[in-house]
Amino acid sequence: MDDMVSSSPTTKAWFDVLKWLPTRSVMELRFCREWHGMIMSDCFIRSHGIHANMKSSPRIKFVIDPRFGVYLDMDKCEGEGALQPVYGIVCSQLCHDLNVGSCNSWGFVCNPTIGYYEHMPLEGNDGTFFAGRIGLGFDMEINKHILVRIIYKEKNLETRHYELQCKTRYLNEQQWHSIDPPSRPIAGTPPTFVDGKIYLMVDPNLGPVSASCEIVAFNRRI
Image 1 (cartoon, rainbow, N blue to C red):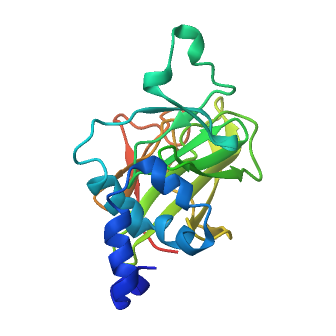
Image 2: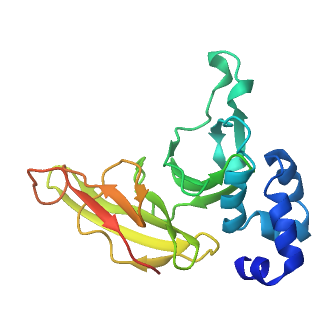
């Protein structure tokens, strides 16, 4: 899509027009096959997030049920009963307008503003709610979002023995690729993406005893 925008004067012109439209107008266009590829591309999402909101106040949305794309505008909340999430949900920080998170035995990627979401079942789930099991980053060299998924195959707090499984894939792909797991056990804390790397906290209750707080960084391509 990036190549198409740069090579076609007509596509570039429409790109420059649509990026200024209100979010709700863009949401209606995503159902049209002719516009879907452009407005769901990473380059358009980033550009629209900057330009369309320059003269408006921030729009805050709550993630109620990402598996079915259920979100709620903050200005529509009325009382404490307005927010009743169906599941316990853990979200990460934003990465180019996208959120990644965990919920029971599945994960998700979503952009509440434009209504985008992807439901990701977790094969081999250990049966526990592991908040740090999915991370989201961005490869600046190839302009693609990358997902990292970590699952505990074994976890014993008494013996401190553990076994991790780690897989990764690009956001616009469906096939996961197995890679070597982190060298240290991962804590139940949402990962953070900073300066091209995904950082994860180490669980001090597993593996070799350490006297200090540890962090591991993910920095490799598929």
